Length: 554
Image 1: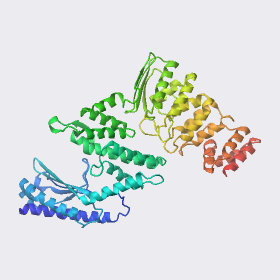
Image 2: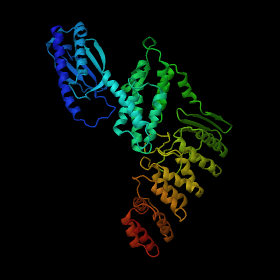
Image 3: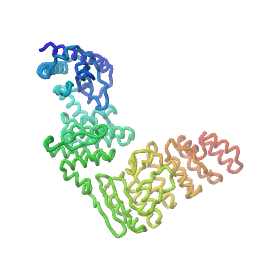
Image 4: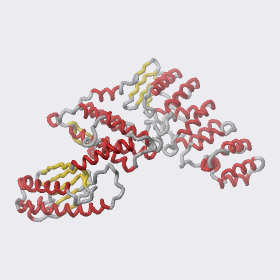
């Protein structure tokens, strides 16, 4: 080996070993490993970055994990004057092969903690000359480790995923399991293999909202990683801000996508659609560019499972279950038109159309329900418009029963504090309009996710403005209060100034848990202290009733 190449190799190798020594100490301190984590290190890049004024006055850059294109956290080292003697021939025929040999030997050795290296390692070498960049890579596989991980994954699926409840995986395993699913070294990338496993774990975690959301995030991110890093890069070049857009490569630079790969890509697009509808649409459009007729059909008319179009003299409507979208144009603003539109949507829901759809409404009427926190979306406008017609209440109630689903959300707004459970606008419209639908209103409030939805905090205000406070509707008022989020504030301008109202309230609170009683008192009276002040201030007979109410929470 030429002296300059050997000097460069020794400098680089000393730097790598120095970094790995520190990393090994850190990794050795980790105790709680996932059974699906073969190791940590799977990437190493050695680069020579030329100097600003003289290419040979640059620095050695070492990255022990794959860097983002917009960041630079490399370890940086100086090099000697031998750099000026290096040639491309020396680097390719002497330096890089020798570096590969050393790395392969180290990768397969037992010099570091058992979890130091993953079962695979990518070694990248880049060298900047005056006017060009030399770039090469080598991929190493530890078959023994890969087989060990494959066996651990198979056992994990049998004992943690397929096993009946209450058996669940540990939370730390979710991240690694999601990535194992989209790793072709470990799993065959087919929808019929991957989808049942994702859905099985989703069902097992459904009762735990936080864990369920975390798992959804992990598998969606893993699926996107497969799409971006394993599939799309074969056919498209990254472009745009942070490389988030894709431009089709010239025909001579790209291969034809394999049918099974394209099929799995379409599955990925649909699987992440609930979480990221914009990404779903982007992926489907990219699949169309690759010649996928199925993707084109998805974008145009959906999966084909539903009657996607309806047209009459009063409305025009279309639905796309893949994009989870419904379009309605009210041609004639009258009761019958909204009746037809509701029938169209109800028919879709009965057939299994996604409840968390978004609705694009074309209507000359713009009515909204009197609740400040509700988004002024097409869905909201549609049900506010429809609720002007009492004859349509039964159809709207049928819709609400079909649409309501715990831990689900409409797609009418970006995920935010304005996100609401399917059925919300219909239930609220009916509850504010007629006492006949108070039972439906109460069922909704028991179902609503109080930890992740807060729009219902103002329902009680709108309810009192519509119906007042009476003995008959105290149960509804209490259910509205109990269905509010923990951030809800005391209600303003509420008047419980008659003994019979307090007595009705006592009847509702009598069988409740202490926590629920305190919540009701806080929202209706501002808390125990303010209720105690009211007891002192009021006169008989309401004074005695308020004292009785106070005794329930003290």
